[in-house]
Length: 75
Image (cartoon, rainbow, N blue to C red; front, top):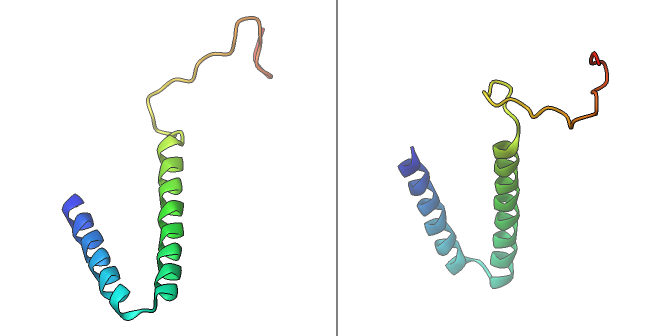
């Protein structure tokens, strides 16, 4: 699977280089700016998913600090 992703990225980059020869510089700059925004958004989403708690994980949450009783808990 990682090889497939690398091949797809390489194909996209090759197409971008080909486009750079066909488009005026201003249009190419706009296109690259749009692609950069999409990539940045995808990276932020991936980071959020990586940091999100998993409901099926095996990590136990830390208890509250000593002397504090959570709402609804017996004292």
